[in-house]
Amino acid sequence: MGVATGASTQTTSATVPPDLPTGQCQLVVIANGIASNPVTVVVHSPPPVGGIIVWHHQQTGETQIWQMNGNQLAGRATVVDEQGNPTFVGLPFEIVGVGRG
Image (cartoon, rainbow, N blue to C red):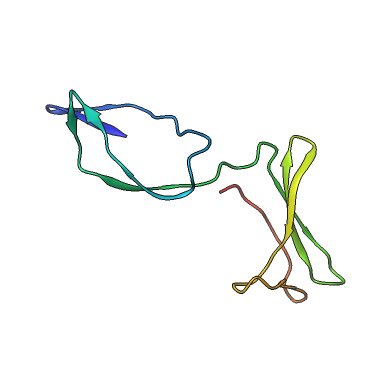
């Protein structure tokens, strides 16, 4: 976030409360009693502490995403389509890599 101070730009940071709902929000900065124009920001869920593991069952085509908290499984879900139905992917497709968002 940048704060204009004459010809130079200063930076600052803000801590988002952990219970802030995810989705679009309006951010307004107040400095010296003067409010900025609102800016639309998107609040995302924080990534799991221990990361994510993607599992793929070659025989059934099921893909699961496991959310980890250290070495403990914090949650898991089968990948679903736009209607919420399990999506089974098989040959010729395969998972070739993963990344962090």
